[in-house]
Length: 169
Image 1 (cartoon, rainbow, N blue to C red):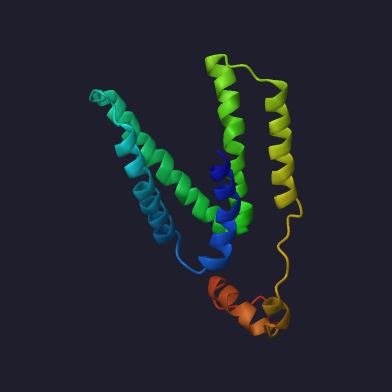
Image 2: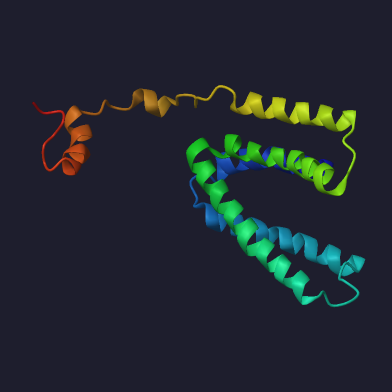
């Protein structure tokens, strides 16, 4: 569990510093392939295969979870990363245990303990601290960039307003 927590903590930093200029799909694909290669020997050595063939319903459920849930969540994560950056976007992952515990309590009558509630508070506090400011810091490139002219801003607007520029009198 500790290794997973450390991985979740340093993953966004690696993504931001080393892989930030790469498109998301190949990065995630490479990550899934590496993860598969790491887990495959563990499954083979531990006898992790099912003792009998899963039913058709189980195979369909796994396929739907894989295609619909996983693929859509990655697409949403890519959109969040594009909007917020990798470090802030991945804080959504920390809310997964909260959803799992609430669903377990609601549908499976699992107990919610004081330690669970304390964990919720810590997760929410950490997410707030990462996302709380609502503003990205200004980089030195943004500060030293040359100013944009009014004409450069007005060109796309003029195209949408039948050739009349809202900036020009």
